[in-house]
Image (tube, rainbow, N blue to C red; front, side, top):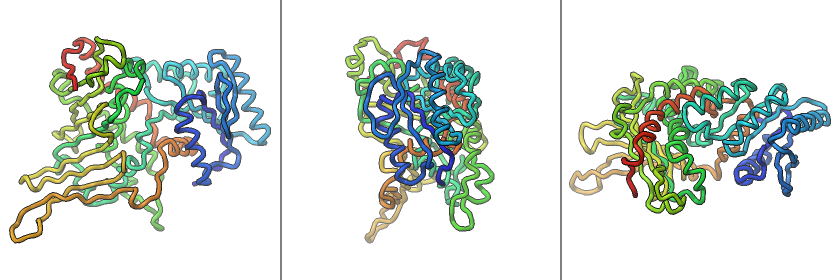
Length: 433
């Protein structure tokens, strides 16, 4: 559905890598798809003199409050030229240590109070539970929860969105999506590359904060959550089109799933959490004593009656065999050859695969395992990039694919015992690979 509301997208940090690689190409694609409103403008906030096509550059010092008041007057002048108010999206494409100050200045300058103003934030949302609480409290002084869009681009991937539809619209899986049929769940995000020159960032972050606290726990929540009742009443309209009204309930259902999720043993962290570091990492970061993990795997369980007793493993690492993100569902078996595995591929080659046992052709009755495979690339020329979805949904005021403050806090609560254990234990449990 085309966006009708006049829109000003203010990208703070327009000269950064995210803007060049993701945000500006995304706005181009949305324009080509005919989805942008007639009155639309991208204003790129920067300190530098740079050349950029299709963007109005606005130079300002982000540390000076008066500069924000000047920006407010400039945005007022754009709306005056248009002859109509516009929604204003402030996308903070800046390092996380800078964003808190910008939020404060947006609030103190009065920009946060202008009707139809929205704030888009990139992860990480804090570095532990307390810092996340402080960040949320700071934002809440100036913005309402409805104004805030916390971006987890994994949630905006096509296959991630399809997970909900797949679960509900296929009776075979809808009726077997519980502890009675599923033996265990594995969610894996592996990368072939190392830290690629991001030494400072990674020394401050590590794999647990970088991927588990955000992306992998969100994928776990989508896998374990209950489908809202309105979905059960029908996902398509009478013409076979999508009925999207129920998506607004998704963040609440993800939060309920996270509230039920906890470590397999908070008392014996070393038994349910494994961490590792690839062998030349210390040389790359120039820190021979570094205990920062580039690999982590943790076992969780859910207190939900639907999932009690089902182990849930989250694993991520760098410098591994291949790049991929998958959700793997292992079904229970009475005999070895009954085992079935369902794989939901988030990236690359988004799709769904299920392994089935069949009889091998011949005179004996030998069994073989074969995959049934659905791949998006076999049916569609291209898929929307996650950041296209992020921008479109924010312009439509749709929060369903954004992380709520409750989800952020609960995710930090889940991994807090691990952080505390590692802080006390040094690197004695660190494995090198």
